[in-house]
Length: 74
Image (cartoon, rainbow, N blue to C red; front, side, top):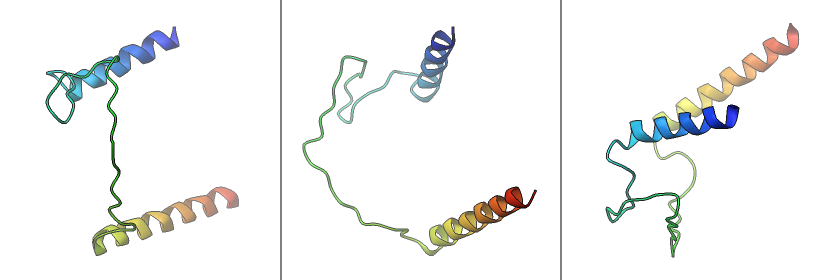
């Protein structure tokens, strides 16, 4: 039963995100039989590109460490 529910949920979310159907970058409809092959990959860099992004990541890591410490102490 869980497989059927999972498939139904996946289909429901897909319809929410793409009410007119999924399309490839050229506007052609996608389905389970379509295979999209990307002939090239491009490296766009690494790390955070903005100071705000860096600050958010550092704050999130600090909160995760604090959460882990409180879990161990309990």
